[in-house]
Image 1 (cartoon, rainbow, N blue to C red):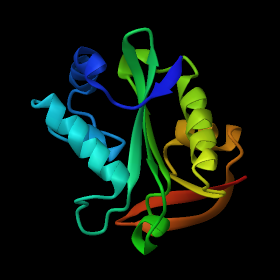
Image 2 (image 1 turned 90 degrees about the vertical axis):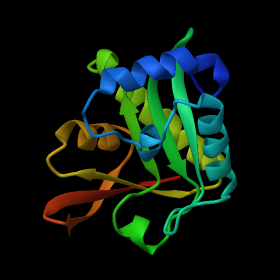
Image 3 (image 1 turned 180 degrees about the horizontal axis):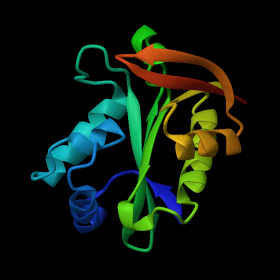
Image 4 (image 1 turned 45 degrees about the vertical axis):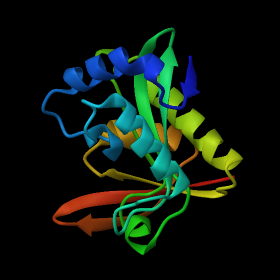
Length: 166
């Protein structure tokens, strides 16, 4: 099991992953990008990583896929830095586990790899946010060194902000 940058080699697995998600809200945000032209998707992800052609309010971010053999098991999106809005609500890490792979402790594995990757990228203080009602995410964050920093109200939803120090 390893983190890889998105590539054409995983196109079929990615398409199956998206279909598995069905109508559920997609995290991290790149899972909402159009994928019918897969090469254009890969180019868009690379531009985000380079900080090119970002929509207003976005910051550079790199997407990685957690894979085993030929199958994508999870997705993480790592923001290289935070702006004021994302520091308020968003954080450095957005991740998800493929529905058929949930309940196998892969969230902990993916969070751990994401934190290590950010430290390698030079991010020493990592902000990770989750909805207060998402107890599984909160547990994963705390299992990986996250310490509750604050709680905010974001459009009627309580969001917890955790900090992981290097």
